[in-house]
Image (tube, rainbow, N blue to C red; front, side, top):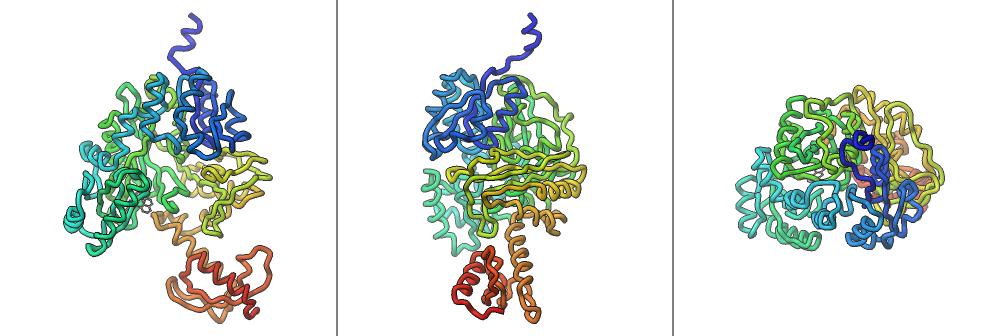
Length: 526
Ligand code: MV4
């Protein structure tokens, strides 16, 4: 009787986390809040990992390579059985969007913390997803809703909607297998290559096409659905600051959204989720034109996303907790009318990468770390001092997020938090973020998908200017000039000043090569 009144609803006792790193740690925290015992799995490279130390039980599932461990559906199901876990949370990446995994979990009479395999499949094919979005009344980019069957069809559709167009893999997503085609003349070879690439990457050569939206912003809507028919949205995240289709900085809300646009994007997203019988947390991606503020459905991610913390900070909801309670059969703990966006949140993905060397991964041991804290600062990390950032997995160290009543306040706090963050032993992107947070384009919210490229070029010019003889000031971007520079900035500790000749719009690596060559030649020092 007592326990019945205390446990009003069913809840899992044990939950297996089929993931590693910061997201495994995040899920462990949600388990603790709910009184659920977290079970970890790990690879040979992760024997000493933080998620293993924090869980109640941990099971070795195989070798360091993901294919031998975190992608092994059979072993994950075995561990769930062996440990007595009733549910499996896939996190993001690895098996999170594999319908085959969701189905294997269900077939083993376990609960998958996420949508049904049918909903994952409905969104896994990008052409099917476009059909679902159209059926739900959402705007999509003009293009095809079925795979292209011939070159002639590709040319005819392109002529009709107008170049430039994008060829995309139907089985792709996240920018993989995408190709910009500027003219009809390019289409023949582009179509063949796109098909071949799609086949090689996804085992499915189907491609479709869309009109290319120029200088788009990437804005996504967080949706949530329970098994009782409640479907809500939690507003948007602005994710335009990306590099090679990897998000680098995310914020909520988007600085360009207003109530009207949010309302329309939110309503479209709820209809899309409803139309595929979606359950759990999901994200609907849109391209938004900076000029017209029109939005176009792009794809749906049927998982928890890396950047969910910024939504949690402006809504006050715990998205992972809600995923677990919804999977246990509860109703969503809030209704659409309860969703209020308060203030502004920004997240920086701190990576073990060298921004001065084309963001090359910088794995290794973290010898010392001081993590920022204080009011409205959150750092989701999968590592501590003494831990190793492995070469086998994504080299993200932590997600640093700050909240403020306004965007400016969130930026002020992010500057402070980044200055407080110290990490020794490996190279990181911390300094890169310190500079972005002081960049006028960023603070003025001129965010589009070309931001990082422009920022890096600006930074390089500023850096070159420091070393240019005053008689030879740098001219505008793009103009080819000979400049006398010191190469020392590229060689830590090096003090020799050396002449190098490069173009002002050279890429950082071209610049570095020229500087290195000049150093080797020992050209005129000044
Ligand atoms: C596009 C596009 C322009 N037009 N589709 C890249 C990620 C994938 N989700 C879709 N992507 C794009 N699709 C049309 N019709 C431009 C991109 C794109 C992009 C989108 C969001 C954020 C960064 C990007 C970087 C390059 C290209």
